Image (tube, rainbow, N blue to C red):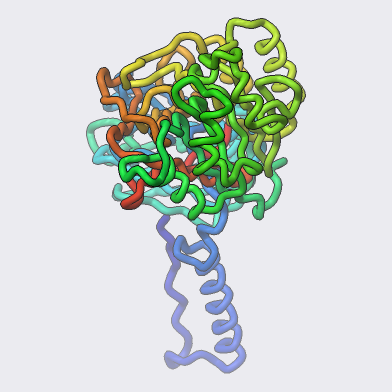
Length: 450
């Protein structure tokens, strides 16, 4: 933003009388104080959280289907929104999901920037209130702090282009607080992995699950999630005791597991060894699927071996209907989308549709023995600002699988290295790192809850 001030009128003999001097000093101090409050670099300007990442976005126009409005809110510096060329005015807006108090807006322009624009908020998407205005923009990054406005919707309304092209934003970041979200202090860390205990122990230098257990122990999270195939090959109770228990069993009391397909191979009966080993930890609600809350998050543990059974689907719908938490994460074994050897598994598409309808944020899976993260997408595999983020985390100790056919929206794939997911949750969002024995191998964008 550009600030303008007019020069004072000259006084007789070029001097200010004492009374006028004191008044002028007071006015200058007041002006300086006001400027400091509005200045982007002021202390505390960036203290409020990012509340626009991954939220639904629309625009007055787009130059092409690959330059949609959602690109300006996806956290990626390599994607962008672009309007049609040569036409004014144009706008882009984001739905923050609930009434929010906006304190800062950061705009990162592409070469096609806005010379003049307004930042506006609205409660209903129809009536707009201006909270900032630029009349002589020069592109680059505009960091507008010290703002004060409230509304569910925020838009950038361009009235004059800086070039002959259109308007184009790499990123539009909105900071503030969303009504109904508890204050900070609810942050916690979770460690997750799937496909864990091969039939080996730490005495074998090539045995991986004791090494991933050491990583998990070092992180010392609030709790642990496992995404199935906890024990190979047939998940008998004797194998759980001989292998899994010697590594990841150290934190069994803090673990929320789900079963994989190998847990169904037990000669004693499907899931027999799994249930005997974990007991009520795996069946806290008397079923192989369950849910629990932590902070502002609702976690749903599902049994993807039984997605064809109406009882689990009906339970999931009822569970989501009763949920009072803002953020939702679900986890099970078989991924809907994967670039690994098993590939896509449509068994979970009906579950994805239910979760997508409930505005779920995150899905964790195993089955394919690699690490992979996807951009937010809908159940049909189309990129969507309000989509679900999926992580394949089957690198807990079983033999790695190669990457075979890269799927749309796959952002990062790592095969051949064992490790764990370190997930960091807040009251309004989440992020994670993929941690291997020799350090961090991938860091995610920071996402806000839907």
